[in-house]
Amino acid sequence: MLNYNAGNYTDAIRLLDSSRRLSTLAGDFYTLSNTINSFGNIEADLNNNDQAKELYYQASQMAEKHHLSREAGVALGSLAHLEEDRNISIRLQKKALAFLLTDSGAVSETGYLLINMGLDYSDPDSAIACFRKAVMIGNKSKIAEIALGALNNMAYTFAEKGNFTEALRLLKDQAIPLALQEKKTDWLPTVFDSYADLLKQTGMTNQAFIAQ
Image (cartoon, rainbow, N blue to C red; front, top):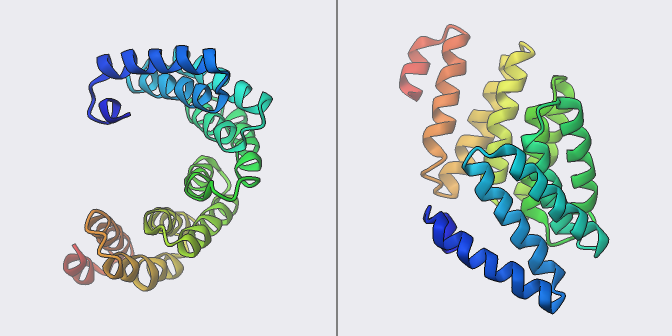
């Protein structure tokens, strides 16, 4: 995974292949499912989506068979991300969520899945419900990145509904203070930029300029 994160796919694939072989011999289905899922991530990064989907499916089936809830949820979530049919994607995400909710240790995975579900919903109210749950998870588990991602997307969803008051409030009163409090310098430009964008859309160009 260190090689994968560094973009060194050649060594990552070589090591994953060894991991797959050894975990198969040992009957270690936890490692085997994660290994196959990692192979899927590499294929997805290389835009080989058909191969990635097949690997994610294999990982999810193995995890389900051996009652590995978190691994099944992660693989199904990855599979849903590549699914072009929105209805199928949402169905896979709901199944993934059901698995993740049975594992108390899968907090971050659950939060990020809820954000992805919110982004996939065409109905803004359903999207907002997912984002709210993700914010709660992020705040409760003190994973600011989850809360900030959900708040940022939820603000734009409210803006799409024409409720700019709530959209701006979410950014001004929740997202920006959270990013400042937690010193999330990678998120601060994003939430300030979103705030400026929505201010501009409401005609408050002077305030938008300051925020920008």
